[in-house]
Structures are given as structure tokens and as C-alpha cells.
Image (cartoon, rainbow, N blue to C red):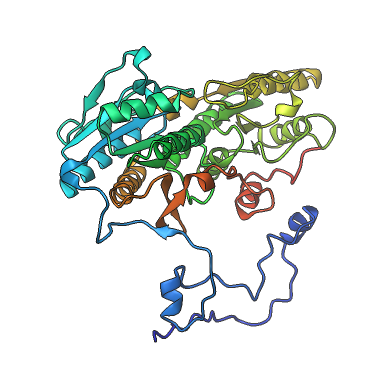
Length: 440
């Protein structure tokens, strides 16, 4: 039995003084952020690790770990693999493609790997897209570029036609790189495969720049995205400080989840206000956003506002109706609306101001992955190949608590990962910006 190290933390004595943070925490009417003195972060995060210390285990829920298996399902000499990228752009797509090709070719000696052009459209004959053979040589330098060398598209296609194409190409393994809409499509493909009694593995590498996939620590490309987004905040701050009563307004990605706005603001620490979809806010009144912003400008001479694209949708006149080609609910543009309301408020108060509005969304999506994300993408692609070659299907790979795991596709699209308004990330943002717990 392996003995646990002594993890006791030495203290100088009993804590008796009320923390200056108590008013902020109490105002939120929650005790969730207070740390329970008796709580602990477990030393071991696997069943095997706990068993090695003599911990009695019940039927604990757990993910299947990623990695190469001793026995595999597919004969590499008779295996053909296909790769498709779907949905919007995200840093790291080319890294994933290259990683898949190298692992399939070098480690498993798979004879042929093909790339499907322009998303799920590439499977459907009416679009006329060709397929491309992928080799380690052809993908050697693609990671230095942003975007995807295979092209992408949005919108559902008939899964029966997709499976027809897989059969014609004699594909045994399909890798789908995409978001929740793409994974729902992959589930339908897997269902059609099963209905026909075919032996085709469908494995996903989940992609979302918003970091909103559940049961995954972070989605690939996210670190690159908030790093580049933080540069936009810096630019907005420089512009705001360069004019009297200047205001910088930065709109970032985040339809339903404000992770990019939160992390970018924390990384740059120049934001005075961060607005995210998870936390409603009011514009008017003494406790509203506009009055707070005017006070901040009076105090500092400038201010910077960071807003996620899905924030404040309830404030806009009317609501955008319908869905886009990927099935996402359409949003109205909060950026220009905020710019107008801020300008009107300062004008009505007789305060001259200049507002610099920055929307770097497409620039962020198109950049190549940074070194951290590049490594992460390669490891995800390796995990996906190991899973597929061992016969796993209708699943995605991800990292949970710093370990790479297999996640059923149904679980990966079961809900949306969002910033917890009562959690430590949002508390860190409030501490960094100095904004009130709520506006209005």
C-alpha cells in the first residue's frame, strides 16, 4: 500500500479578523465562494490511485481514459481514414489535422488518409467537392497557418448520403472536427452506420472557440483566442487613455458563454467592466452600467468595457429570429447598441467623450494556434486515433482534470459549459475590474 505524503499546511494561528472581501461576497447572498476550512482537493483523481492507498471504492462514475490499447479492432493494413472539419474557424484546426495524419501513418501504418473538402458538404455528390489524400509530407507545414486546409461549411447534410460516400471511399474510420452542431451530425452518421450494420468508427475532436463544451477542461484554440483578445483590450485601453474622457469598447466572442471575455480581461487587467451572457445587467438608473461608467471616467479619465457577443440580448429592441445554418439561434449585435447608448448617456450629461469600438472576432478565429494549443491539439489527435483504432465510436476525446478521456458524444452535447456567476472565475473578474456585483 502506498503511503500518502503529509499534506498538512502550517498556520500561524486562528483567523479572527473579518476579511475585506466579506461585503462583496455577502452582497451576492451566497456562501458558495467561501472556502470550507474542512474541504480538500483529492490527491488522487483516478480509481487506481485511490485503490493504491487502500481507499475502498464503490461504483464511482468515471471516464474511460485515452491512450493506445494493447489490442486494436482495425487491421491497419486494411484501414482507410477520413478527416472532416466543420463549422466556424478556430485556432488549431490544422494542428489537429496534421496530428491525426502523422499518428495514423507513423504509428499505425494506415495505408490511406483522405481529407473531405468543405465540411459535411464534401460527402454529398451535388456539391462536387473532391477529396484530397493526406500524407505526413503534405501536412508538414500546415500548422503555421490559421484556418483549415480542408475548408469548412455550416449546415446539416443527409447522414444517409454521407454514409453512402464513406462506403464508396471504403473508409473505416471517420474523424469529425467540429462543435456541438457537428457532433450532433456525427451522432446521426454513427446511427446510420449502425443501421446498415457497417463497421465504421466515428470519433470527434470537439471544437469551440467559446470553451462551452461540458466535461472538458478547455477546448483547443481557447488559450490562443483569449491571448489575442487581450491584445484588443490593450489597444482599446491605449486609445481610451489618449483622449479626454475616452472609452474603449471591445466586443469578443461568446454567444452563450463568457469565458473569452473573462480570461482576456484577467490577462490584460485593463478592463473596467466585463459583460457576459450569464450575468444580466441594466443600463439605466444610478446603479446601472451607464452611471457606473460615467463615474469611472470621472475618476480615471477613461474607461474600457469588454462585452461578450451574447450579453445583454434582452436589452435590444426586438429579438433576432430564426437560426443560422449550424442551428444556432441568431443574435442581435450588442456592440453598436452599447456604443450608441454610451454616447447618448454622456452627451445627455454634458460630458464630451470619444468611443473607440473594436470587434476583433474574425481576426482571432483565423490566427494559428499558439505553442500551448499546438501541443494540446497534437495530443488530442493522438488520443482520437488510439480510440478509433481500438474500435471506439460515437465518442469524442477531451481533457478532464488534466487527463485525456473518452466522452460519449451524447454527453458532450448534453448541455453547455458556462461561467458560473457564483464561481471563482467570475469573482476573479469582479476583483480585477472593481465593477459591482450587479448593475441595476
